[in-house]
Image 1 (spheres, rainbow, N blue to C red):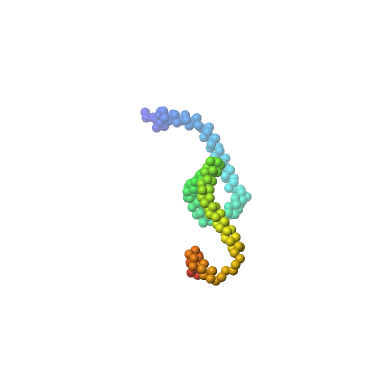
Image 2: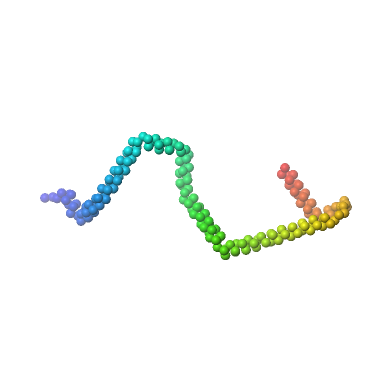
Length: 178
């Protein structure tokens, strides 16, 4: 007499273990199926409620969603990994800057480095101001009128010649631009 194929399958230990496991988990499966049924019932009721559908329809229509918007959204989604990398890099830079600003030793070093560049500029500025004051004082002390012969003598001096060359070059450049 031949055995039924189902009876043959039930003789295997793996099948018997699977049946025992299925029976043990049966209450969990039943609970999940009940929840799924409730969710389907809610969805069905929601789709049959015309006021809810009208509300969501008007909400969706209030947004300007056209094909260009969808393409832009897809393009943005494609670029999100790169944007994320850039934002992380920017965040690291900000964190570094915050920690550097809060560290007194780093700030002192930065200020000293900056001061080594600005001190010569400040010194040149002071020298220029002193020279301007000296020129102003000398000009006020000289009370005699300037003659045409004095001006011709000054024009021959190398510094005046260089200044006149600059003026001529500037005028030529301005005329070429206009």
